[in-house]
Image (cartoon, each protein chain N blue to C red):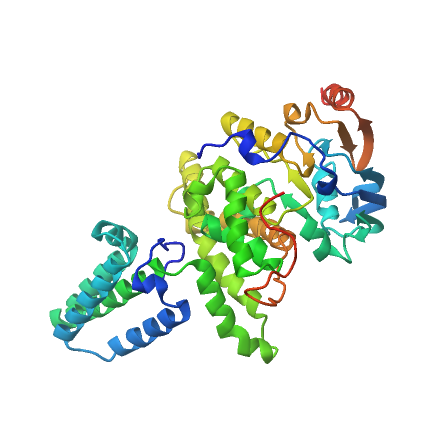
Length: 218
Length: 246
């Protein structure tokens, strides 16, 4: 799943609870790993594509969103074809392609906030055992989603700056300044999260206002 | 960038609405880090609707702002916000005092604009209905309702700064602290932010190197090596700061 790809909409998948969708995705993905018949996998892929389209996403948008996974899939397929045989490669590509499309359908209809709430509920038993703080654990996952594009952008900037100075292709030369930047950002971000009132107050009711203050207006 | 007018951002500039102001008191506050005083025995009060803070890099301006919301605990002394201790009662203080960071990318937590506004409201215990209302109202105030469903990483720097400010305003603070709010903005967005800032009914304490931004503030404070060295009208303090910076 790629967070932040949610599209507004009113499709049946949009109206389905996030927890239900995530559970269904997990069950479907697990089931597909036990299916080796390429005809069944092709049907699964077609169903997954129809689900992805039912969210309102066009073929072009789905293609753009799944460009990265498609590249990985192509490499895997070629490797299997070369190392094993064409039939195995087809099964692997169809299986992972169907899972990617299902994940896209869930992603396109699930906001990060909804996902975060599901994670908090999932982590709640561990919190009761004193193993972790559910809200913090869910926020950690959310932050990873928020900052992947930003860190990728920073890596690109560092690479460009280094290329301008004649340094190219050094993983270490990229990793060190990137790590420093991420650590500096982490401190500021931690302050910002604290300043914005995290961790949340425990909710009292979803229907009755907790305070008589109106949010969002002076 | 979405259309935004000063009118859309709130009521009259610097109105100092009695309900949207707090008394902030630093009592002999020192903050020592790595053997160096970031703030050095600062005693000062803030209650005006607009207060500017100037000083060279490393002079302690940002530390002063962070002390107000309890992000930095004084080594000695206390900071009070409407009678509440900024460290021991940080949660209550943060409910009425928002902080806008210099770099919006370090402040925006969620990947979608509307979700980020909801983040602060959820933290402060608002109900789901209140959060939905607050997000809509917060975006409307700054004229950026059209950005609600946008991904943060696709926004311009100016749009991100407005989203970060909308997130701060969404919780209806009495005071907003601005830490160099125009540092990452081009001229057009700097002017937009200035219009928004001047139109806010909330009390604003603004740290900035952008002296034009502070030019019509009723009070400006100059900090040097962790100490308050000037405190007066914008004309007087900014002239002195310009002279001292030559």
